[in-house]
Length: 70
Ligand code: FES
Image (cartoon, rainbow, N blue to C red):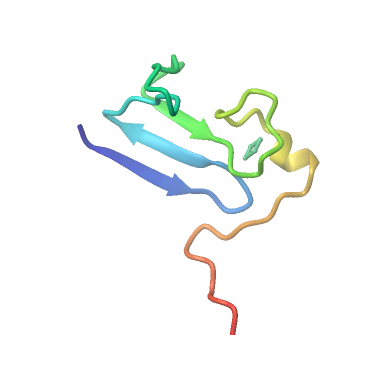
């Protein structure tokens, strides 16, 4: 399996490729396509998937690594 995860500025993590999403117990979570958007704002009503709520709550995050606190 090979997959890429792309963080989008102020938005979800896009997961593309060949992957499975499973619960901590190992149960498979059905996905809607070959590319999925995973919530990273914590406010989606469809976790672990993004439902667009990040825009309503003003979630902010960089598209690359966060700078360490100095
Ligand atoms: S990142 Fe989109 S709803 Fe959380």
